Amino acid sequence: MKLLPDQITQIRDKKGIEPLPGDYPPLSELRRILGDHTFYLTADGLHIWEYANVPGVEDQLIIALEVASWTNKERSELAAHKPYLTEITVMLDSDAIDKAALA
Image (cartoon, rainbow, N blue to C red):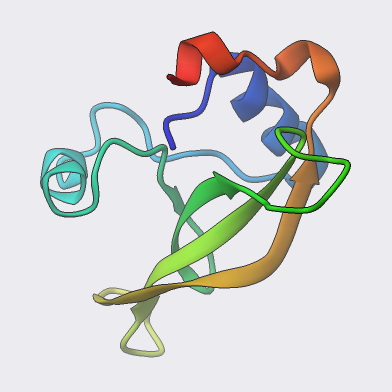
């Protein structure tokens, strides 16, 4: 999913991570392959975010999906793989939820 500015701010404030900048050279290729997402590069690999399907907290809890992992110790190359759920979650404040903007 493509995150809204308020959602990006909450992830930064709660997890201390930033998305890839809009002028990051491989970003257009990532979007072509994986779709229009907000991408995060961490020590574990490349992540995107999706809403978690948890009864009672729909559209408030988001979870990171890892879509690529580092292939070497230097963390200079990534290998794409089937997306899988991580344990990285963020409970969004209600003012950052805007379904209309995500539709």
